[in-house]
Amino acid sequence: MPDISAKVLGEIAPIRREDPRLYNALELLNKQVLSLTIDVEGLDASTSLDPTGGEEPPDTPTGFTAFSTGRAVRFNWVATVGATFYEVRQGSSWDSASFKFKTVNTQADIDPLLYGTYIFLLKSIDLDNNYSESAIAVGFTVPLISGVPISPQVIDNNVLLYWTEPPSTFIIDHYDIYKNGTKIGNSRGTFASVFESTAGVYTYKIIAVDIAGNESANSEVSVTVNQPPDFILEATHLSIFDGTLNNVILETGTGIPDKLVGPVDTSKTWSDHFTDNSWTTIQDQIDAGYPYYGQPSKTTGTPPGYYEEKIDFGTIFSATIATATFNFNQVHVGHDVTIVVKMAWSDDDITYTSFTSGAVQFVTNMRYLKVRLEFNPADDHALIEVFNFVVTIQTKRENDGGEVDALSTDVGGTSVAFTKDFKDIETVTATVKDIVQYIVVVDFVDVPDPTGFSVYVFNTAGTRVSKTVEWHARGVV
Image (cartoon, rainbow, N blue to C red):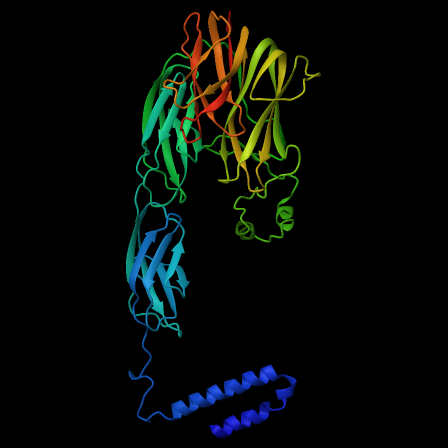
């Protein structure tokens, strides 16, 4: 062997000056081969490199465990002597079990699972693709998510629903909200406010849905809503979203309310969407941090996106209050879209007033009303779903209003006194002058010659907060 080594050195000598780095590498390799050969030749002829006389499979793995990380099922096991790879299958018998994954590591994750009990099997594999003779098994169970504990509170005609997150194997994605068996929306928080315009007994149900799609057990609560104040409601319009869409799309589906989604750059084709962002696959988009197809959101333009609808109420109304309400869901948590409501009106469908911001507008004379929802994203991740869009108009005899500092420490709400001597009140409304969403609850008792009302302000988590509230009252003097 030393002779062969010397011959190799002679062969590579010419490249010593041309490529010294390559020469040094080959020289080092030659020395290593020579050293290994000398070691092997020095072994006793009776010594066998395989004392068993044949190739044996790797040992069976040990310490196989499975648990939930909240977002995945994680497997761990102990490294096995002689193993190069590990394979996991799902099933009770290795030959009939379904392949899950193969890895060189001693830890791996799989996607969240639906309700049920699962058996997983693990074998080790050596470099020659020999499997361990037996597999080690581990069980994993996804139990039913318990019912969501609901704590209701009724203030006037406002039903406040509080709940706590139930224990679950995987992270809760959202909560579906039902009223009398019909889904009315969803929430990613643990609080919702529902306004009921008529008296009655209402049953609400909250269903928790985890990231795997598992739904919790039913949890219901019934509350009694008393006769509301003496509203004089002239017309109610429930939008079917047949108006003008500008960088906003309409999402429809069985069992869910129609939704506006935006702002989305609707000028791009499917191909443009990927080409313009240097993506070739959907996974490229996800890896870039945009898990929803509508992303990147439309961020240019004033506004970047809007929905506009014209409503014909059939006749001219004088001295009316127009109110626009809707439910919404911020699609990408931490990236919010602000909705600005604007209205313009006309009595002939020719000459309209300028658009005025505000979800509640006092209108002198009107038959036609244009309502615009403007979508203003915080960044190009922000998307919002808007549904249950309702516009109402109410007649007004006399208007009163002002501002009050609603304090969270005021027991029974903050008292607000009317500045006019009303004989009867038709409506009382209150809003927080802030771009951040707050829920304002008005507690008004409809009695002859009313003198005032109480007001509460809640954040989206259902906690009372102190805020300046702008209020309006309408009634007969």
